[in-house]
Image (cartoon, rainbow, N blue to C red; front, side, top):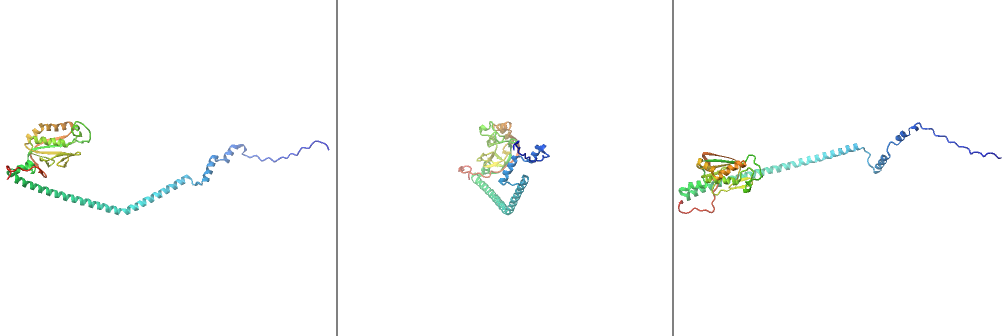
Length: 299
């Protein structure tokens, strides 16, 4: 039977119902994929490494707590150790105090022994002067500084510049001085020599009696007289005719030198006469080479 070819049957599939939010595709995408892919990958890698999922604030608090516990443990151990060692430290301190007290007592005893020996030496010197000096023994003792003297004279006070500072330079430094406003041993040497030349019969500095064997030296900034340190102000007592001694010294070259120190470097000085000065005897006068000549003046 001929006829028109048959058309294959058309099979229609039922269409899916349209989503109500189809018109809001952008909002739908954001809701379905709220986490960025990069963040998602990072979270996956972190999970694969086994990192803790504890939030950072909580981890920080845990770390702080652990640190506080450790600090408390250290403080507790230190306190316990200090409590254990306290008796030992106290015992060592007491032992040190005892050693200092013993050393101080020993030094005091030695000083007393020195004073006794000095008195003994003075008595022996007096006896030697009487034996070899005859009627002139007392005069020899006065001139040698072995006996205490008193009489009229001058009092000269020499002091450092107010608030003198170390260091510096100037004319004095080129001559072995230091331009600091401090009194130097060379200054006191010139003062003493000037007083001797002006007629002084006996001189002392800060109650340290000068003799023919006395030496004025320096040790750092300190002035030594017969190896004994002196501290400013330096009080120089000179026995002699007060008025004449004062005038001659101030007009002498050494007196002018002292005045120049006052004017140019701030050294403080004052001189005054006195009707009665008392100078102590020298601690000891040791003669190692000189010997008295037999004959005149000997018994």
